[in-house]
Structure formats: structure tokens, C-alpha cells
Length: 184
Image (tube, rainbow, N blue to C red; front, top):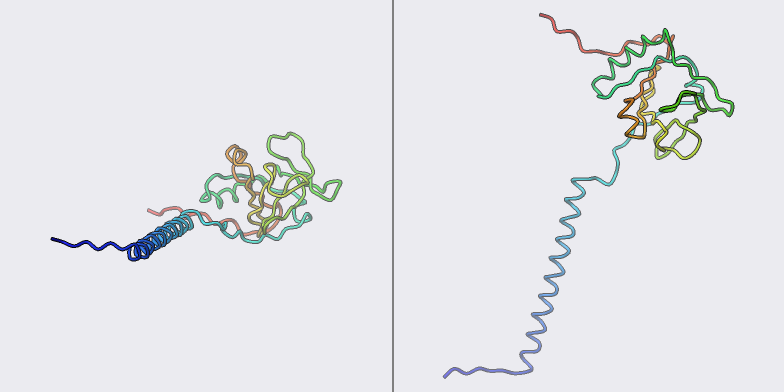
């Protein structure tokens, strides 16, 4: 005959230890699961936006005659710069505004508006007075050698007009590089 020993003193602490261990293990598993999700999320969608190169531009830099073009694919930028340079025979004219801004056209407008330069988060925008980065703004992503690259903030406007390229007229600048023709 088998003998079974039961003691209220022995079962209590052993049962309590097992529950404590089970609770600890469940908590550790939950923490590992959460930390695992966080590391996967960090790899998929980083919380920090990529750095935007700093652009230095003044209102005075904008005033003048510009060849204007636009592109939809980054690979078309050099060709667009060369094409915009050809439009200096019928330039896009930017003048000083009455309140120290510049007079330029906004998307879908037939008359120019006074626009101002705005800075936010290391980015430079040009648009109507007010907060930076609003849908009517363009972000100036590049200004060098008399060439401004400025996509619209509003994606629907960019879809219609592309990324704007302004090339200063009358400035002796090296032509934008294009792919050499295949020889054969």
C-alpha cells in the first residue's frame, strides 16, 4: 500500500513558490514580447526622420529672373535644370513684396502672392506668412550654384506640378551633368 503524505505546512509554501515562479515567468515573457515588438518596430519605421541638409537662402537671393521647370523622378533633375535654363528667354520673375517677402505664384493661383522664408526643424520653406510646413508651402531642399529645388509640401500639388526647379538667369553656372550618349 502506498502512503501519501499531505501536510498543510508543506503544500502551502510549495504551492506559493510555484505561483510566484509562474507569475514571474509570465511577466518576463510579457516584457520580452514587448521589447521584441519594439525592436521590430524600430527596424521597420524609425522614429527619427532622415536628416535634411541645411539650406542657406535669403529673400534677396530669391529676387530676380529664373528659368522654371519641374520633375517627378529624381533621375530627371539634371535634365530639368538644363531645360529650365533654356526658359530664361521667358523668365519667371520674382520681385520684392511690400512687406519684405517676395512675390511668387502659389499652386493654382493666377496672381502672385507675397511669400516669406520660414524655418522649422532645420528645414527651410517658402510660403504665405504663418507656420512653416503648411500645405501651401514649398520646402527648399537645395540651393546651390543658382539652382533652387523646392517640392510642394502638399502631395496632391506635387502630383499635379512635380518638384519645382528654379535656375537663376544670367548667372554663369556649369551646365547640369547629363548622361553621356552611348557611342556605337
